[in-house]
Structures are given as structure tokens and as C-alpha cells.
Image (cartoon, rainbow, N blue to C red):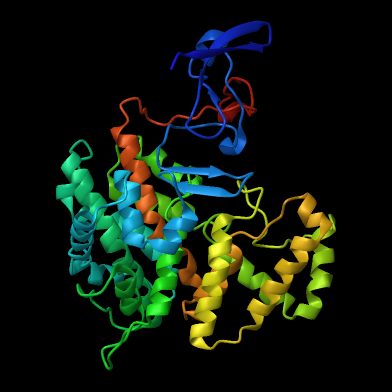
Length: 428
């Protein structure tokens, strides 16, 4: 494909910048030489108009409500596949054959145990520590136990580290939960699938046999698929930025978990539950709709709208059906779901929300589902981290293998004091 260029006039200078086309989505202007030619930087807080990398992993069309993993629509993967198949796809770029899938499942299953000394590591935390604090520390600590997979220049070590994290982070997440409720840790079982194994590690106790509910296992597996990757969001960009310095993969994923912890990122479904509880009943919805429209009222409808999606979040449609399946299976009559469904119905028919394209996103339903499955609110973001680990790893691996990748070094618009002369203390 012949190289395209665009003329950009900046101040009194006109520069010729290369234009790069992606497979899908808008083209980009390559501004790497902008400063050299003009002496100016670009200013883009939040990087909402800046492409920080080239990637072949995930594509989002926010206007059309499209999410693709390696070119496959999220709806098809969630409906017909399982989470480990999605992991293989994100890591290797293609769907596995039956033999490749069996081998991958075997490798992940045989890496689920963590070093026994990790159990004593947990005892250093208070019982009321937030599970995400425990996850940041314990995932970062994996690099102290697995020295044979921290050489990022070795492709074999990179893959071993990737396998270990996909396998061990659910074990650490279950340990964080068990520690918070004062129950003994439950070891993984190799005869269970990935998600069933995780549920057992979270909810089994030594005094009785635990039988995994297949409906709940399938629902959580689908939730993991929906959260596996989401392009260059805050936590993924954090992983890439950390990895650009050559940091080991365990440290990079720990950095991603720290970023995910923020309420504007991974904690959004918790905020939805709080909002639905505040509304309380369907009769009170019009009152809160009116408050949401009032510019002078700080109340916001959580779970509506998205930084990227300007259409119905494709994950939300799958999540809504999954929520119904879980509640039907458990025989749960949840008033919050009634409020959620009525709120969705009203908002989708209200001109104000239609005009502003405030459609329900995945967080609108996922919190209700996880609550029905008996996960405490503090674990919601941990579950998000379990699912997103493979996306972080795939993005990290892609960056490491990109020969043109450089250490991240954003610029700034300095607005502080100009150079001043120091005055000694005796003269002030």
C-alpha cells in the first residue's frame, strides 16, 4: 500500500505528516516528527484522540456498538465459545483446533496452584483489607517466586509467564476472598473447567462436598469472556506503559490491577448497585430520571453511557440475558432487577437519553448478576481483573514483540513558574 501524507498547518509552519490506515476505524496522522519539525507538542488530556500503539487484538466501533476480538464479534464468542478458547484467541490470534484447545486447557489447569509460601504471605494482611489491595500485592509478588519466567527477551519465558498468570490469578482471587471471610483456602482441582474451578475455590468449605451449578458456571464464564479485553483502556494502557520500561510481566499486570481498582474503571458496576438501591422501587424512577436531567443536581444515572460506546453496548445485551438466566436458576426475586429493567425501558424511550445516546452498558447488569451469585461487592473488581488478565497479557506480549516499540514518555504543557533565583533562608 503506497504511503499517504497529509499537510498540517501549525502556526506559521506547514508540515507533511504520514497518514496511516488501519484495517477498521479512523486513520491516524503519524506525529512522531512533529516536535522536530515545528518545535510543538500536541495536547490531548486523557489521550482520547491519540493512538498510542498499533494493535491487532481488539477493535471497538463505539458508534455502531461493535466489539471484536481478533475480528470475531463478542456476541458469537460469548454465545458459542468458552473463556479459555477466548484466551487462546487473544494470545495467539486464531481460534484453536480441538487438539490445540485440549493442550491449552491442560497447560492452564496444571498451573493453577500457587507456591505454598504464598499462603503465609496472605497472613500479613488485615482480614478487612480490600481484596484488590491483596491482589495488587500478591500478583506483583509472583515475580519473587517464578524467576524462570521474568526474562522478557525470551519467547518461551514470556509464554510460561502468560500461562502462569492466566492460571494462578483466579487462585489468588479466590484466596483473597477466602481470607476476607475467615475461611480456609481451597486448592484447585484439575478435573474441573476453569470457571467451575474458580467457583469451587471461592465457595467450597472442607466440611461438605461442593457441587458446581453449571448455569452459574456458564454465566460467570460468559462474564469473563465479555471482560477479557477492551482495547486501550486505562488499565491496558497502564500495562503497556509499565511494560515499555522492560519491567517483568508480573509487575506489569499488578500495575494494571491497580489502575482497574479505580471507581471510574473497574468499580462502575458497584456504583450501579448503589444507585439502584438508592432508587429502591420502580415508582421512584421518574423522580430520579428528572434528577438525572437536572444540570444542577449531582445525581447521575450509573451504568448508562460509555466513554467509547455511543450506541447500545453489545456486551450489555448478552449480560441482560445472562442476568435473567442466573436469577431464574436461583429462584431469586430481586427488586433491584425490576428497578433496572424499568429504568432501562424508560431511559430507552426518553428523548433526552436517546438524543444524548445514553444506552445501558455492561456494568448496568453485571453487578446484579454477581450479587445474586453471592459475591460481595468488594469482589466485583477482582472478578473483572481475573477476566481482564488475558487481555493485559496479550497486549503486553504484542508490545514486547513489536520491534518499533519504545519506552513510554508522554510530554506535558508546563504551566508553573518560570525560572527563578534561589534566595537563601537568611535573606528571606
